Amino acid sequence: MKPRLKGNRWEINYRCPGYSKSISERFDTYEEAKARIAEIEYEKKIGELRPPVKSPEKEKFIAKKFITVSEFLDEYVQLYGLNHWGDSYLSDNRHRIEHYIKPYIGSVLLRDLTTHDLDVFYNQLLEKPAVVLKGHKQTDKTVSTSVIEKIHGLLRNALNQAIAWGYITQNPAQYASPPEYTPGERVIWSEEDAASAIQLCDDQILRLTLLLAIGGSLRIGEVLGLTWDCVDFSDPSQPQIIINKTLKRCKKKALEELERRDRAKIKFIFPEWKKKPGTTVLVLKDPKTESSKRRIYLAPTVGQALADMKTTQDQAKGLCGESYTDYGLVIAHETGRPYEERQIADKLKAFIQKAGLPSVVFHSLRHFSTTLKLQLSNGDIKAVQGDTGHAQARMVTEQYAHITNGSRQHLAQQMETKFFQQSSPSDSPTSPYQDKEIQTAVQLLQANPKWAKLIVGLAGTSGT
Image (cartoon, rainbow, N blue to C red; front, side):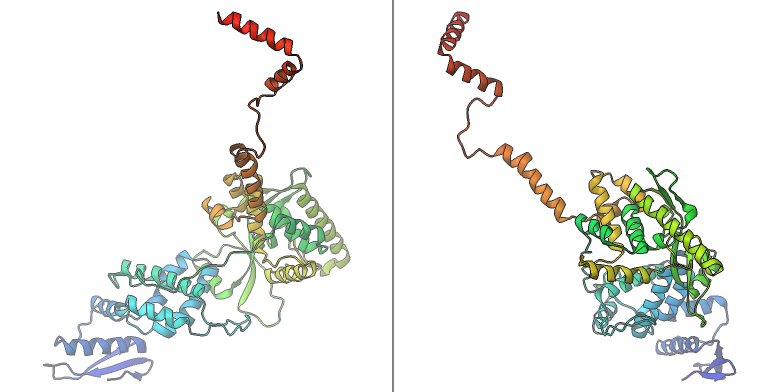
């Protein structure tokens, strides 16, 4: 029995025991027809095949009984993802579903999916080539354990939702064992490295981004999305900035879908400069979380760099005239156009190579800034959290606080002077007279024996 296309619908024909006429059913999709065939064959096998009763309840039962992993994930994205995910997470999860999950386990019936199936799937992925998206470099690498961990997290959450919707009763991902992922330690600069970078950098754009990232603990999108109306350096001793937006390149499809649900949170869409329309668009949007909206107090050095940049931009506007497009951005090209994350990353990479500094990515500067501020504030987590914009204080200590060699060396010195030297015996014989006043008195008595006899005599008299 195979589905046949009749017009724009798929038809199946079969006979039912005890029913003289041939039964014909039509479906909107090929997958629905195949699901009905699977149901018919199953009911024939157990002797419960009956003529179809057309009712919404029956159709709903069939859909739940024979839905595949692929069909379920499409529904999961529409009903759950669009209501809970941001544009980046939506695009990333769609990529994982379409390129990794569907090709391997998409045709499996949801009710038949087991923990063993998932363990086999995860181990298969380790030997499969990583999918390289358009615009990314070909690496010839296999799927990493990091990607598999994210796929596992996505499936675990999706299958929990399947339980809530009544498709299944147990989550097969709950006890699955994906390959262990061990994140590498993020490399950050030492205080000496960061100070050298600021001193050596002669690129005004890059230097200001370094100062804002280190002085304000900003993400790269927050640096690039900062506008002059959110900068206050009227008081040179206490410059301030307000973080209320971020610059980001987003997938058009994801933004359009979120916009229909009033979840895109877009403040401004930059025009496209390429003649051929692309699949992405550059935007100013709300920050990552509500707690990311914050006021930050900067050091005067950062405020002076901001003031110098404002002067440079005013001069550029005068030179370019009408060819300057003023978007109000602090970090901008000579014509006013915004810088993008990859452009700053390229500048930083070239500068690091030229200066001979340890190789770091831009986000490492935020880690360095958080670590330094924790040290300078003697562990004032709330003050540092106010700068970083984290919703939970534990993120400051668990994810962003790094132990530097300098702080460890200082700790060792403190252990020596404040503990070991106080508790260890000295190499030279110690005097029983430790108090300075007593030592002075003993020296005087040794120099004047008569005084000593007089004191001994007085002591004997008082003793009687």
